Length: 315
Ligand code: ADP
Ligand code: MG
Image (cartoon, rainbow, N blue to C red):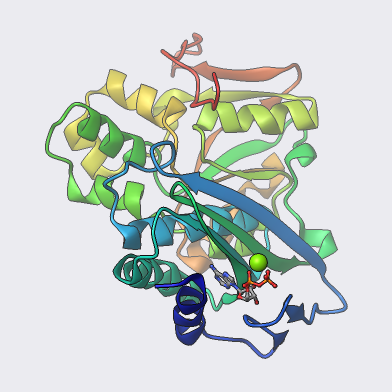
């Protein structure tokens, strides 16, 4: 199959939106941006052997390539609209593309995201996605907006994907719930939109809580104190790992794709109310203090030193 046929296959299956003036097929896409919004753009690449194992299912690769990008938009408090897809493929395999699109387009349709263009080349398997969305200038969740005295919150549960990876690396049976968290992360778009009006700073958790919260702290020139034993753990994680292993997975494991945000302490009830109204689970995990760095503490206030830092490329 030639590149042209692959693109035709992709085009035939992608849905459009009213604000797409011209999508796949011309030299570039033409898109209508709402006049009262900021355009938000994020890009992430997934490489075979680095971001997913070579034997990963193509549908899961498709889902995750878009999910990690939508997670970045969620972390800005944005509403997603469009995406582009650059594929580097070792060979033109129609069955692979079809399965990849099953995952990719299932997620795109869920969030009404139109695939409006891309690029298709031959080379080692690599998937680069760019997503575009909109945000109100007054509701953006930036990394540099944390303030001393803020409470720190996370959505959902932490450590599930890292738990699945640990089981896979240990060649143990992988718990299906943990595995789903690793293969099919759910971007927290609704949470980003819901908490954008009340939160100060926000980030999505991709490289591990302590590492990602560290980015918020350095951008905001503050420190964070995280209560390790307050981190939300799923029943599956609690069943599969003892508390020492859990602490490591929840603080330093990657691939959570939950949101972490800070909000003024006097907005505590407001955060709880938004969570109840939207049905989004949030947990208060610590507070923003003066200083620098992220400090994990135990219930008695003593510092807890993580066994290793978050995943760092080229380290
Ligand atoms: P050009 O040579 O002008 O870059 P291409 O042959 O690369 O044209 O692409 C033709 C059209 O198909 C363009 O609209 C491009 O955005 C789209 N396209 C190419 N690859 C993909 C892809 N993997 N996913 C979505 N659209 C794609
Ligand atoms: Mg091109």
